[in-house]
Image (cartoon, rainbow, N blue to C red; front, top):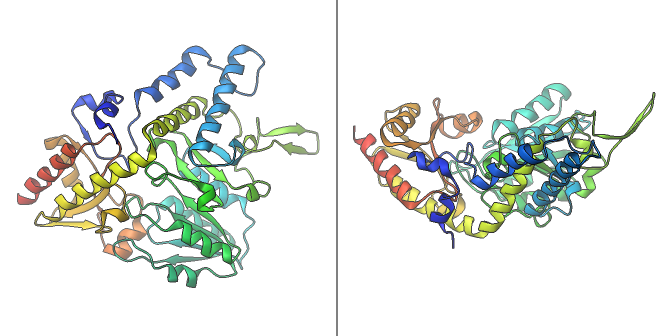
Length: 400
């Protein structure tokens, strides 16, 4: 059972009186993670894998321990399978730029993707003539697996799909999609930016080839994230950048890259951020991902039940809370979503997000929303009282 009161004590920022319902954009960071980053700067500030002196040795040990912690968190076989990146976007682009694309190749993605997992593939099409096929969902963001069976064929090189929509909160059946893709010899990249923070992730059970995720959405620092690369893909997945730290030998005419994950982490990495991400994974493990999933469902139930009963309010995404994480997007009739979000902030001390949420194809294709909508997104530190406060505030705004 989640002890929300105890958890909130780890987030001093919540004492400022703001009800923070924007975790889908970026989660808050607990004091334990902040202190772990400060520990690096205060006690062993040095570059990693470079020096024999004690500061460098301690920094290197903490850095490597964080790799192992992050790998365990997502069920990866070892730290060799997880390249540290600065965010999900970098991980997706690493994969996109690693493939020797051909005109005969096909990429399959979906209409509900974040721009990072959409325009990346459009650029591949522009550069290489590769076919890109977009699978449509229902207006609730739900998919018919038969559509993936139709879209994925023997020419499909890669299927790129999100685990959880950052707009609709819907949980995509990625495991089933991966099975379909593998039947045709296609690889699968999952955008785990919204999934990893909210759903217990096991990359081996999932069967995924690549999983990209961001630290700043899972209690970690900004500028931190990871890309899981399955064992079978390590040898052929090329680094996005090479340079210092990525090699074991260089001659006048040639070079030899280091073993993973070092070959993917060129130059001086974001040492403090990676160490902080490791601490964030420890924190989430202590809380228990199963507890977070249960609390997500509780918050989603209250959120949807409250919003659906307000006159003039339209909700987007699955009607069944079990098909989504604790996230809801909505609009108030005849009101611009930015005005709604600003009113919630200035008059009710509630932080939400408004706009298209970096998902314009979804907004255009499913709802024809030019200005987007308002998104309220929760996490383990949110309370039912905060959800009730949001519902009361939206009710008052809708009456005006």
